[in-house]
Image (cartoon, rainbow over all chains, first blue to last red; front, side, top):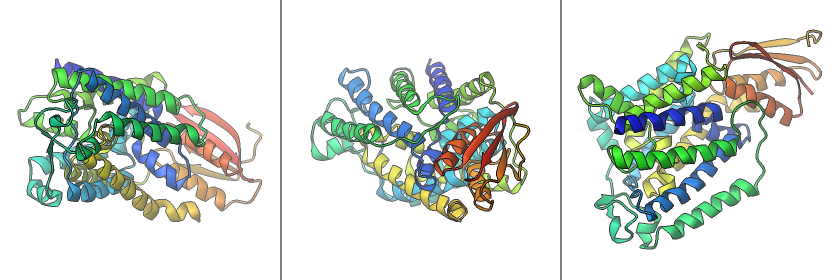
Length: 338
Length: 79
């Protein structure tokens, strides 16, 4: 049941990612490189809506919130590595996953190496090195602050640090994001994809469905993720079972494939210069190690973790953005500015 | 739009994100005002982002033509 629910969640997520062209690498990078905030607005609106939705679902008792641990060293170092990696790979964790379904061969290579090195960081030859880079991890007993949190130790959030009702920071945070989204000018974009707010609303529904199904039928109360899913898929080769998150990643590829075929956007795309394959491979390696050191990728930390107001997710996200901007500047900055 | 004279062609099919966008900008920078750039592209995100961004810069998008399965030809006149 968990596997089926993961597959369904991923299937719809894949459709939304493909039709919305929702790539976090582009969202962050375009903001600075092209002064274009179109995809960034989709991400910020989705996070505002998810913040309210997750807290509401937890208040109703449908889910319990499980913020990721706070790893100051790992969140920073891993965040930077992941940020560098996604620019080299030409897509974030979800970007290379959904574009694999669109027929982009560079995304296949990036995704394969990303998954391989994420797996090696957890169970393989990189395990010790990654653990060392990660530094200490902090967790707190959050269920004493609010019964909205999963019992036992979870990562600290703004609410658990200040011992306040989680709704207070959640509403302030969501209001600030909404003020930014609707109070500032949004870049224009034509074409036949979903527009930015449709994408954000649909992502929120997928994340809500994901949180509920993963907690109820799957491995734990959390929502969308990519890195753990790829690790799960690789571990099935060594006899492990496919779980919710691995099925979700497979679902994304299938959903994106069907959406791309239906909208006549499926094509096997190959760059003319084979060096590009080496670049995306290196990018995938950086992403795999970076996400493991940081404890999550742009979906696990950014899209899913930030709505919890988890300190670890907030810090990792900040360094995803910094890493992305730095690498984009090194690779493309001169060409754009001339 | 077969009557438009193309001054330069940029084939960025198969390139990773955001190479098509960056190369389009660079090509426009090196051209003379009034000249026409032809961009051949197969990546949906860039096919939508390039016209929006070049128009913001003041250039004119003459046509976006579907030339094959997930392949487009964009004609841009430099301002």
